[in-house]
Every structure is written in structure tokens, then in C-alpha cells.
Length: 362
Image (cartoon, rainbow, N blue to C red):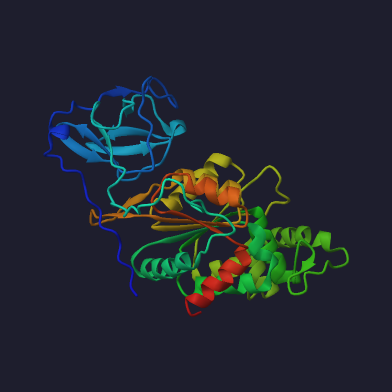
């Protein structure tokens, strides 16, 4: 079955609500990194601004940022990237009262009638996720050809042979367009390829090896000796794993640093705001995002991912957003973003990725 994307319905700007609306107020940023008082903060939904008699859509949005009018277009900037004099949109209302309209139901998601009192409305370990898997197979097949799929990954994948192999197959089959992770995912994945352990445990038997607590440090050190990951892969004859396949198939990966990092590996970005910029560069064109077993990275990416994407031909389509974690708190934290496309799946991510790979016929 091929995926049928839900059609986007733009607002009818001929309605009195819009024709009678005032122009959106603009005020220059008083200095770098500071918005004027009364700035309008963006949501995850499509938002329109009445400028010069026209309703302009913010094409690349991000929650909790500000709208700036530049050259007859609306751009969305983080506060830290504001420059003195940027024309920032003001307004705290959402229904045209101040020339701002937040379009929360543009995809017209079907609503299901239910009793006021009913069981199991939230997602938990008791939820049956079979339909979610079926939908995800369709989404991934569609976006492999017509979109861009970004994966946000915690280190749990690197601790299991089958999970690493399954994700390698997904990369080879074209289901991965970018990977966002931290030092741990890359370190333990490379350790698994190099020494057959992850944090000193054998990736096949899960048994701790003698002096195994040195293995991830030896791996980082060897990568540095070689001059980088590509050189390490060549020098040590690495032929498997997540990072190996990213390098082999030219899939970009962004490794954001943490204060707890060992080493870290050479590609890890220690400047948190530079890491955020690089992550957002990958998210700007994402049409499907899967966050797995990493609470902080998942929340960070959820915060920078809107519920829609404006394609090069001007078409507005929804963004599919999944959070997979064995912890219900993480899953429901992401689902609480309010996006119609945010889905949570409570399961072990190692099992999830193996099941997903099989379901896609790989």
C-alpha cells in the first residue's frame, strides 16, 4: 500500500477574519541577540503574517523562535542569531487580532469520537503499536523516494550486534538521509567494529571482557592516532556498523558534544550552539524524523522540528515525527508537543530497529 499524504488546506484569506485584520506590527531588534518587547514566539504549526496587504507563510519555522521580515519574506530566527535592526514581528494573539494567524488544523486530521471516560488514551507499555509499524513502513517507503529521513540516535544501538546490522541495512537501502547523535553512539559503534565490544561487553554474548573498560578509550585514541574516522576505517579494515555505513554511503552525521564525553572522537562538536546549528541544518529539509533512545537529543530535535515542510514547488506537507523509547516519560514528552504527526512507540529500540528492518523486507 502506498502512502497517501494528508492534503494541506490553506486558510481562506478572503474571509472577513483575514480581510479585516490589521497589518502585523514590526519593530527593529534593539541589539544583537535581543528581541523587542512584545515579540511573537513561533509554534510548531504553519503561521501567517499580514505584511504589505499579503499573508506570508513562515516557510522554515522553529518553535520558541521569532519571526523576522526580510526582503518581503518571513524568516524564523533563534534569539541568539538576531541582529540589531532585524524587523521582528510583534503580537501575542493567534487569530488575526494583530495580523498573525496560527493555522493549527491545516492537515485536517480526522477526529475520533470517544466517551468522556475511557481507558488507555495515552501511549504506554500496554499500547498495541502494530498499526504504527504498518504506517511507518509506508512513511519510510514514501520518503525514501519523495522526502528526507533523519534519525536521532542514542548509544543503545551500538550494544547489540543485530541492531547495528539492521541499521546498516537501512542505510544501504536508502532509508537514512542523516544521523544526529552524540559521542557515545559513534564511539561504541566504532568500538564494536574494532574490538567486538561496546563499553567492554561483547556485542554477541553481552559478557564483560577483561580490561574491557579500556576498549572505548582505546578506540577513541586510535581514531585520533589515525587522524579521523575515515582514516581509522581504512587503517583498521572496518567493514560494519552505523558510522562505517554512513561513511560508505555518504550519509551526513552530526555528533553533538556533552559535558560528560570521554575523548571525544574528532568529529564531535564541542560548541553546543554550533552543534545546534548543524543539527538544524539537517532538520530544515526533514520530512520524517525518528528519535530513538536518547531523551535529551529527542527533546532538542522535537523543539526544532515544525509539523510541516514547504517543498521546493511550494507544496506544504506534514512532517512525520516518531519517538521510540523504552521509557514512557520520554515518549509522552515528545507526543505532548501538540503535533498531529508526533507518535510515540514504547519499546526496546534494539528490538524496534530489527523489526523495522524485517518489515521493510531487508
